[in-house]
Image 1: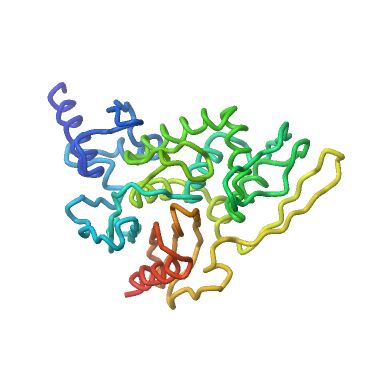
Image 2 (image 1 turned 180 degrees about the vertical axis):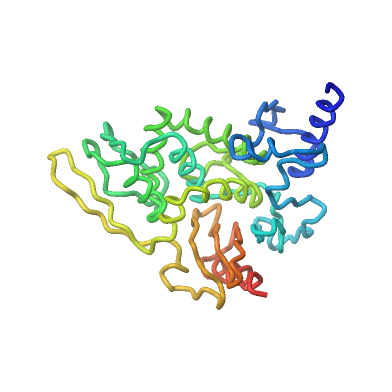
Length: 327
């Protein structure tokens, strides 16, 4: 029995190394972190099914080694893309997918995951202060101090409109402060195997120490799409947030999706079924997008583009990836 336990542990550690392409888990600020349950509850059933030391949690994922990535190109050193056939757990294409880059508002998929795991959608939040954004051009909602709104309405507005104040509202509701919430984000990232990720805020507004990789985003996205409500929200073309102001009056805020594929401003390649995803844009991160789609055979795909110079470049690059899902 003791020998079998040792073999199972060895197989588990070997799987981790293959998955991450590294020799250990590196946590915040370069400190090596010991994690007792590296992949959390999602893999509990898989662990129970392990019958030999050769099997492990990576069999649920598309595994990619650093050696399989394309070489660096000076003109696109801050660009990355990734396309994964989730049905077959196969990597179709990758470019710099382990490079640490700024995710902008794609960060909000982690905020959404923690919200769905730790809050009730019907819970009401009473805003006890205004949420102030200091970054120029940061998208916000019409919510102000004294308003009463449900968690679900805030979640929808965060994902559809990409409202940065809504991410802060959810973070404070769940953890008490954005700083405490960021710690939860980083711990959850490690549990999912996203070992090259470090978050400092819930919305993705720029901070030099706030980064992730295309592959890590795939790991986080794969988890959050398990929630049907998340998929329903990110597939919406538009949404109306309803809440009560401090005088008890009903307020409605209409918004459209930031995903231009859903708005038909950029054509979805023929044969691709668009479920949706999350956009991200800052002056430093440039234009970013993560999507879940299907082809006509019913195969599910995850695609990521980070660091596109313009919106046009972003949607052209993503369309090029999506075209590969139909071949």
